[in-house]
Image 1 (cartoon, one colour):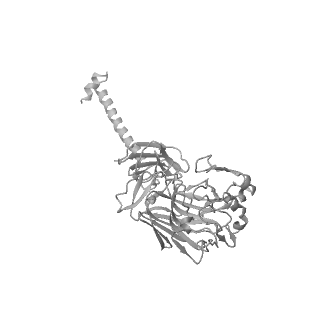
Image 2 (tube, helix red, strand yellow):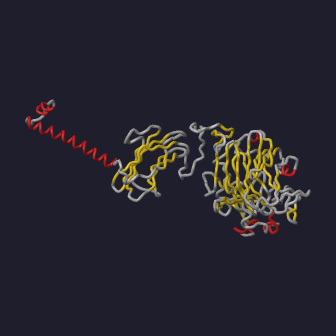
Image 3 (cartoon, helix red, strand yellow):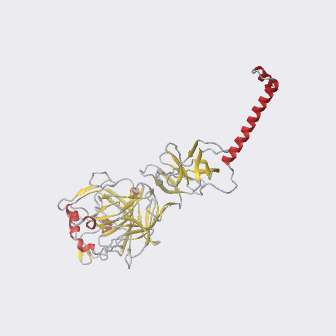
Length: 496
């Protein structure tokens, strides 16, 4: 009744015409609302169970961004993602991010941006709309708590969460986990498993394949290469394999060639990455594998356990150790050895001591003011030792080291065989290192005799590498294709 006078005043229509006109407008509004509801129900389609959209994968990206995706299924023609951060959806809302995806890529329907900034503990709330065989279906009221970050390639990023999850029943541990530069850390709970790898594959988010020539303190007679011949995973075991360079490049290459490491992990164009043979200064006769967690995992205090089969062969030795995250000065070197055993089947010191593969050693190594590591192997400061009737390289064993602020304890197959007091040099972050090395200046005392022939080089000799290479026929025949490799079944690290 209020509208009719206005209709008559503003038009030339009669009263009856105005009534008909206004009735039509009201009906149009009603039909529009009904149609909107029908369309909404068609789009929202609270499903009768015939189809359920697949679960979404949410990946907070480092340093910024987020990726959310679902796997492709036959019949899907459109996917829409609706996202909020730290605020729940009350119903069907657009959200902070609302994006329709019209094309599938690499088998997934995915939305990705490089601008969203997330932190540990944030909650991503989302719902997903999927058009399947022409009808719309929803996956409603989903959420993801940010507890990890990922690189763009999908590998896990090395980002440390500085806060213990308070929902855990947690007693704080003395152990701490550090970032790749050793500046920020995360607390851990007592007994918490803080690192594990069972080597189903070579996980590049955990392990860095090192490529470089060797340097202080050991100057091993190898070049470490990021090469599938030297580093490979086979039947759930990590294999680190030393091989003769001449088998790949020919015999003359050692004396006259040059080697430029294209994937060098040190400063390019330095002597760590590029060398040329000149006279007695030859190239290393052996390439080998070296991997570490320097860029992904380091810690202070904890218990490390490694199940491994050690390498066998003259002048071979394994590296299963913890190395300091911050590079040491030339006059100072610290290391925690989880297990070490020389590969020689027979090896006697000049004094008649058995240094062969029957002997296992482990513990802390500390080198100061030019003191060599050999001073601790054969001198007054000895590492814990354990002798066995068989060679330690004959089968798999479990090697364990527990590191606290006051002492180092070493075990093999759960049998303790030594402790050592620690000092402030070991109150800093260390990372895991695994490798196979050969020869060098630190592991084999001068004057030792291996199965009838004398050690062919002197540790302080200017031609040590050259002399070692000239005796290739003596030592290479003791290397079998399989036994010369270091094989790692698993590695686990717990907080104290």
